[in-house]
Image (cartoon, rainbow, N blue to C red; front, side, top):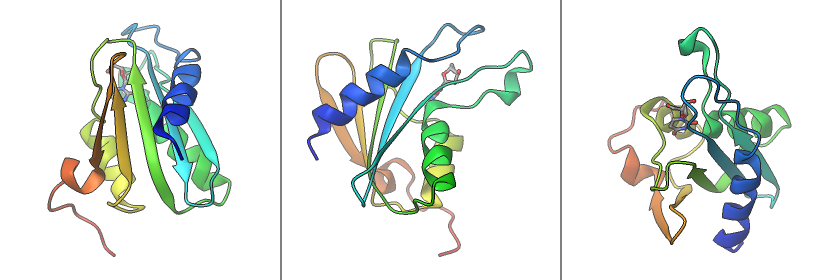
Length: 126
Ligand code: THU
C-alpha cells in the first residue's frame, strides 16, 4: 500500500490525541499484512507514567482484534519534525516482528526505516 494513505490516516488519528500535559500530539496508522489499518493517538494521564503512545494504541487495537502480522506503521506528530518511536514502543513493536517498515513524516517528506534498524540487537524470544 502507498505510504501516503497510511500517513493520511495517522494525521487523522492525531486529531484525537489527548495531550493535556505535553500538548504534543502523535498519530499512528498500522497496516497489517492482511491489509487492514488500525490507528492510534497518544493518550496522556495526570499520573504521567500512565500515558500511552500512539504506536502502542494502534498495536493494542490491532492485536485485540486478532491481528499479529504487520507490514508498516506511519507515525506523525504536531512537532513539525520526524518523530521516532520511543524506546518502549520499539520494544513493544519488536515482539511482533522486526521487519515492519516505520514511516516517519515531517510535513515535507517521509523517511522509512525497518524496525530492525531502529532497534538493533533486539531482545526477543522468537
Ligand atoms: N509519544 C508518542 O505518542 N509516541 C512516541 O513515539 C513518542 C512520544 C507521546 C507520549 C506523550 O504523550 C508525548 O508524546 C510527549 O512525550
